[in-house]
Length: 148
Image (cartoon, rainbow, N blue to C red; front, top):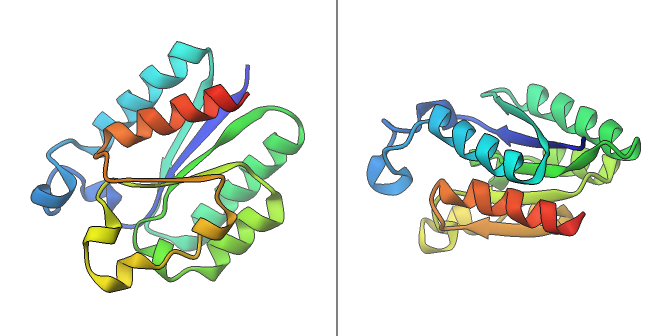
């Protein structure tokens, strides 16, 4: 059984209470349930993590890369939050491991502040999803399953 990693960056632990007009009322626990249901549809295992610390996200990307090299990973869905716009280190980790990445954003970042229009991750991502709300997580897993 292959695994899907879903990683969430800084402040995503505040889903449901942080700017609900932008991010919706669903919590990170709700997102995890969406991901678990999507993985179950395809017989995939789920590894779901959130951290406010860049180094923890990098460590998980490295782990995902090792699993992919062993043929045990379907791919990685990463909502890096604000690190999307600032972290060369996350992009280097993805590039260095060769992991199949879907970059995900709950909101449409291109309809928001100009600093959110640039992503260090897009250049190393297989695909970019934004603006579907938390439903985007399930859609990203659907896409990874279809890539198998």
